Image (cartoon, rainbow, N blue to C red; front, side, top):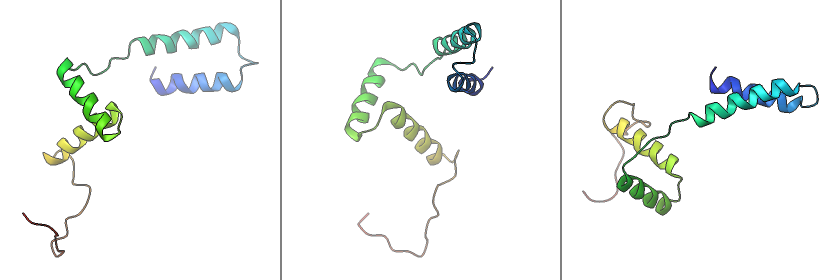
Length: 97
């Protein structure tokens, strides 16, 4: 069963809490507990973890948001994802290079 199905079942049970049997509720809660216990996160080297925490704090982002941004930017820079905006060949650029 996928996470979405379990979440939907729990939401449905919450909406009908007076009508659901104790046994059914127990089964749903145990299933949800097992899924949460078996969730694997991204395991990083402690130095990398510390650096990410520092940068995330500095930028005002959560670590998850920062990792999503880093991965997305890397995939875009290495042509695994399309560039999210069109480059304007005729426009002017400010600044010096």
